[in-house]
Length: 318
Image (cartoon, rainbow, N blue to C red; front, side, top):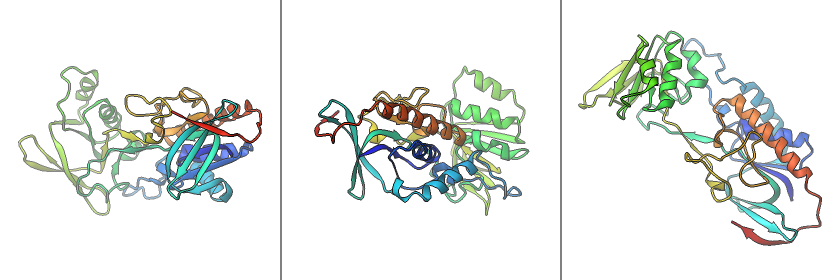
């Protein structure tokens, strides 16, 4: 039986794995890849050598350490997680993978991340990281003096436009849904001379080679217009990868795992870190910190375990 199983090998999961091993915990990281969103880099014409995700080098160091620890990692996909009760009334966790192997642990840390919602238009996948981004927080500083666009109709998009407006030459807000009549955010956006609001418009395609050079938008009347841009920020939110533990821990209205400041979930022994949680974790450095905090909390939990005799599993808990 492991002390701790960590699911997910992005910035939070890698950090948690290294910290757990330093604490001499019997640890297993189960992940389909190593690096997560730290594998995603933005490349801009004229700034080819610029690394855009703060903390990426630190993640690489953690990744290199984990790659050397064959005994502590399994490249596989987790299919199910169950809570089991032992004959002394404690809970342990049963993790089943796609390869058919199963593992038990006294504690569980979920760091499965979140998937950005995409436009699914021609050119988007090809230009990902070449001008197309899903995080203005991470990449806005790269577009100083350039023409940019943000896609979205809510506060997430409004914040991104406001941030870009202070440094970009021009910012287009492409909002397919009707915008609120009263909004302090919209009033702020309208105060910028370099912001154009395209209400009711949709992005039909993006183009350019090898970097993003333009987007084509469809007006409410169906007419098409090509607009030169160098940066496109798709701010439609994310889908947290929390299905594995939906029946084990509390989720918020957006489907994110609820955690406190220590990375603890609603279930003792289950911790979560990074973008899958309701903490503000879009930045890599924040995810790194979340992973470290969650492991320290799990370590304290495990210290309270008195090593019992080999447990007899008696029931599966809901």
